[in-house]
Structure formats: C-alpha cells, structure tokens
Length: 384
Image (tube, rainbow, N blue to C red):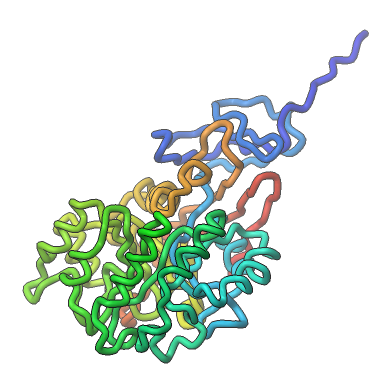
C-alpha cells in the first residue's frame, strides 16, 4: 500500500479564531494560514495537516497587528523614552511610532541604536526642534532657533522608510510666547518633504488658531485632553472649529499619556458624535506604569465609552496605518500581505480604569493580548 504524503503548504495555521479585519469587512470565525512570512489564506476549515504548526484559538480574536501611532521609545537619550520591544511584544503591538523624540540632530542615533536592533517595527515623527525631546521638562521650542525646516525636510527625504511626518508640541510649556510659530515652521518642513504633521495640543495656545492651520491628513493628538483649550466649549459642546477641521480631513488622535486624556471630555464629545479617528497610548516613562499601561488597556477604555470591539480594532490598526501612509503594508489581514497579526482575548468582569487626571471608572470588558505573529516569529504575551 502506498503511503499518502501530505505536502506542507503553511508554516503557521491559526484555527477557530474570530477574525476582525475592518478593511476586508471580516468579523466572523475563520482560519488564517501563513507561509514564508505572508498571509496566504483566510478561510473556514483549512486543513491543519498542511501546516507545520497549528495554533487553536477558539473564541479569541485574530486581528491585524496593533499599530500605536503615538509613543516615546528613544530610551537612554530622552527623558520620556521606554524600551519598545519589552512593551510591544507583551501587548500585541507590531508597529509603534515614536512621536517626535528625535529631532534632525539626534535622528542618526535613533535610527542606529533604537530602530536598528529592535524586533518591533519602529517608525517616527521627526520633531521640528533639532533637539527633539532630549529634556522634556524644558520646552523644546521656547527658542525658535532650534527649528530648521530645511534640515528637518532633508532628513525626512533621506529616511522616508522610517520617518512618517513632522511632530510639533503646541502648549505654552513647550513654546512659551511663540504661539503658533512652531506649528508654522513644522508645516513648512512638512510641505517641503510632502508629509503630514502631528500636533500636540495643550494649555496656553488657543486651539482655534491651531486648527485653522492644520491641513487634510495632519494629526491632532491629545484630542480629549482636559487642560486649557479643549475641543469642548464652556457649556460642554464640541467647538465648531473642531467639527470644521474634521470635515476638512484633519485626523484626531487620543494620545492618552500621563496627562492628556480626560474621561469626561471624551464622554461628552462622543455623546455628540465626535469620536477620535485613532486610539494611541502616548506611552512614556510617566504613563507606562499607569494610567496608560499599554494599548489594549487604552482600547478597553473606549469599549467602556461605548465603541464596539470592531471600532476600537479599526482605530488601532488600519486607521493609524492610513494616518502614517503605511496602509499598503500594515493594518489588514489580506491574502498576500505581510503576516502582522495580533491575537486578543476579551475578558468579562469588573475592571478599574483611570484617565490621565486620575478619575476612576469601572468597565466590564478588558482586552488582553495573547500573542503576536510578525512574519514567521510568534511572540507570546506575558501578562501580570
């Protein structure tokens, strides 16, 4: 009798999971097959005998690798930096974007010593200030001489594989009496390099002045912050300037951080239909041990605020991928695409969450990362 030989077609096969892929309009049970670092099939009942390794994930959620569009990972050089790999590999993030930790003068070190050795994919916004965020407590744009739009643009053009745009912080602590001049300089650099900007908003610079300068595709981060000018007026209504900016194509990002997310602002804005386009952590040394912790915890807060699971996944996968103009590479589970995959569990119970102003609220669901796949590397997520 002839022995039947089954040729292995897949390196990894995920079976029985609920695939959520917003770009593909998928939210159902499917198997996902991977070969040579690419997704080669998304279908029901794929033959497990054709896979070198099969991982059963019944009842778990198989989603595109999470993308955190706002974090600070220039560890050892800036006052904000945390190491990317330990946090990303344990929380389901396969792509993380550093939001302006490096300026043109410090970018070579960021590229060589942070991006180069990392297993996580790291991209960045380049700060309009040449010094970036080396010493956060002193505003990096108190002195406009730190800004050199030409050198910023040149650095971006030479490093388009890593740099996704220009970062600027627009609060009085960062710019002093310079108002929106740093933003204008950031836009000048961005237009030279043909990239978007990410603008931090805070106390001390009028938000309407900032919003009227923003361009389609630019990102406002900390959109639900609760100090100084916010997107709400004194009666708790979303200001017309914010609605107009959204209509014009400006992208609004959460950017939670240690001081930039108010539960009440988010709740009031969302009740009026003003929902962020992107959900990010603003992870740094002042937020990683609370109130942020990680991206799944941040997403869980928005489940409590009323978003569906599919909506929060979209805002942490394809939406940020589009914002950084990488949606041809990441953010989806399409056949033929690189295998960037996160497997999540959705826990039921009572979970305490805190906003950046230490307001406590209790949610009844919490997302937890189980493992990630990046091409052919499987990383199990260790939780406390």
